[in-house]
Length: 84
Image (tube, rainbow, N blue to C red; front, side, top):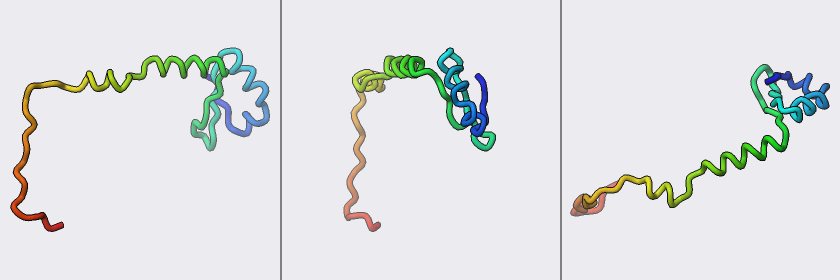
């Protein structure tokens, strides 16, 4: 992945976009720290579809909860209200 300082990315934005469209994501830094990654829209769409296909549904998450036959233990209620 090519890394571009923000000022260079501004000055050579067309080259940055062309490289991303050619299939190579481009990272832009700000003050030496990674800020954004530019990639082709087609690749972004592919990653979004991939993420959605791996997301568990609510039903799947509920089925993964541990199941047992134990009763829920209740604590006795205090004789008087608690002072908060």
